[in-house]
Amino acid sequence: MQARELKERLEREPVEMVRLAWADPHGASRAKAVSLPVFLEALERGYNINVATTTLDSAGGRVFQSFTPGGGMNLPEMTGSPNLVIRPDPSTYRALPWEPKVGWILCDEYFRDGTPFHFSPRHLLRKQIKRLGERRLMVGLEVEWYLARVAEERLTEEHVGVPGVRGRAIRTCPIEPGYSYHSETNLDIMQPVLGELARTYSALGLPLRSIENEWGPGQVECTFSAQDALRTADDLVLFRTATRQVCRRLGCFATFMARPALKGYYASGWHLHQSLVQHDRNLFAGDPLLSSTGEAWLGGLLEHAAASTVFATPTVNGYRRFKPNSLAPDRAGWGFDNRGAMVRVIGGGNDPATRMENRVGEPAANPYLYIASQIVSGLDGIERNLKPGRRDDEPYAANRPLLPTSLEQALHALGASGLYRRQFGHVFIDYYLRLKRNELGRYRQWLEENRVSEAEPTQWEQDEYFDFF
Image (tube, rainbow, N blue to C red; front, side, top):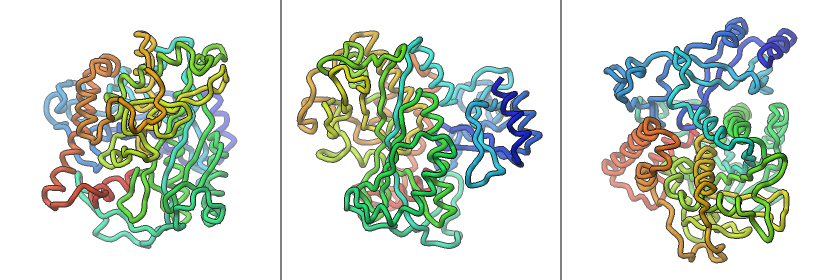
């Protein structure tokens, strides 16, 4: 029915091309642009793409031996870098406000025989949502990112890399001096760009609540109203790609890298607000603070904090956030309306808006994996009736397990998790570990070759993540 309605809509609109988009394992948007007749056919039959985007690390380096039996994964169906079929999801279609004759739609990946693709983050989230039954996970977004002015008119050979090695990151200039929290003057400096972004988000149907001037120079925070988990993940993919494209067309640059290797740049985070709802009743709301369901869900988030961290903070750079007495957590604890805790509980007293804010994420996280990890941990808490313990009024001094301090530690914790292997499957976990360890290995090799201290963000991180995210 949705496909028929979309076809009727496109008969009335002057669309010339449609971007068939999907999120890769890093959460980055990949797309193919097809003509309108081909898109209409794709609604009926799907569209062929190469599986390659799921075998590359964050610098486009090939991680797996695709042209050997099993594709380097011991999976016969992955031999030879085969085609996948992507199926457009009609409910996600948008006309791009900055390019009105171009449409955009999210797609799901399948093998040619109709089997869901092993490494599709969207499929993984759907599987976890089904486990909720009649319950719905409502998720609100609070994402920080950096806005800067482009300082180079043209790319040069320095910017061009090779597979597995990125070229030099583009140079930018701060758009405002920063460190005047919520300064109206600095907000107004950015207003021409932020106003265009707000109009874009509205035209795309993204439920924007606020745009705020944060702490660092050009650091912005966008918040969005809570929606169902899958819709929120889809919207995050569209939000990031729209923000980057609109800013670039205005001579500016947007990055969702956590802490750019630039003077005075403070780390950005992605705080995930979540509540469980059934028949329009908030299952977390209780008196005086959380219901027994809410306490168990919170207990699960804390119990599996280390194992799930890599899905919330998947880059080398993201671990620069986890410092004591910052606005990011350093251990697996919780507090009531306390921004130093990993999980900040808001509401209570049977407040229907009661929710948990997980503050462990970085803005470059894959939304499907980040949100799916919350369901895995939370449901395990409910099934085992886990307890979160007393709240932490001094979160940076609490007797709680420390969070991983590096990508290496986070990958080790994930690899040792029986829960995530059961829920995401050995095939996906082994694949994801290998993908991220390849990224980590390139970083370690660069440090050895350049004999650089890790005390501050490195040029490798800047080149690797600044433009990719």
